[in-house]
Image (cartoon, rainbow, N blue to C red; front, side):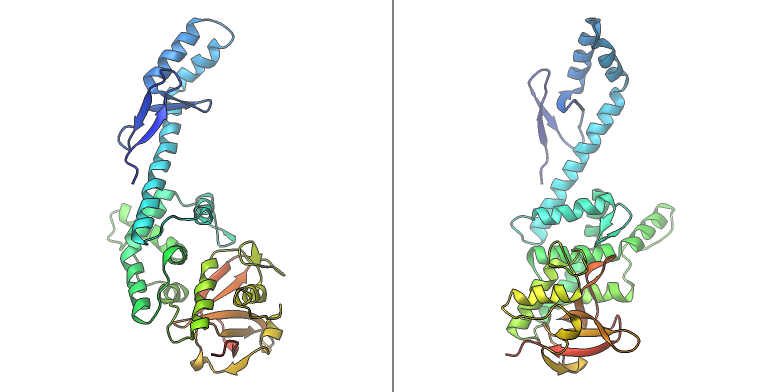
Length: 328
């Protein structure tokens, strides 16, 4: 964790040593100043009584605001450094990718999983992550007990999806706690889909290749749904997502859920293993959607433009057909 930040004062040239408890600094016109140095500089410019004097006089009058704005940016940097360090240590990853931090930035601006959401401050998300960590670790331990667990940044993104699915309840519990009510911060009674997400596992009951397919697929949780698309990062529809995941392993499938339903061996739901395909239909039973089974009664799929690529219970809709493409 970064305990201090260093900035160079544009007035005196000395280092500005900043901590979370001491952030007396002003940022002005993309330059950093000790607060006292900034006052000295502005007073000197005002005394010159030229066309710039009024600008620096206004800056002095707005000093509290300038210092507050600088403090807010610095606090964000401190929290991000702490958050980054926490995730690297707890999840045993060398570094987190730009893609992950891009997702975090989207969440702060009010966008996640291809849909609008309430903007979440970085510090709030960090607090929630720590509050839920024991539950997330229990899920991972359950996964390990049943086979290969998701790890590294794959697990980081996966756990983020679980947290986002529970954020509304978490925020309400926090609000109740502030009001003095005995609300439990970590609400363990999640919705059926949230529970499904927490218990999702890439089960060892699958074949080696099916296991790999499932592991690979969950890397893209949170990416957008795009009708007709096949990009795992920039957007895919349901069959395009399946097509691209399997293509990684040299398996060619059609870009159509109806066609994919006939490109393997039909199996029963009780026979499902990681890497198998689960198909859904309209009211008449005509196939119009496909998902990849990842184990533990869960599937991953490019769901809709609003929700993007997500994990659900395989029974979130009634399956009309299950197909095995991988045969070992």
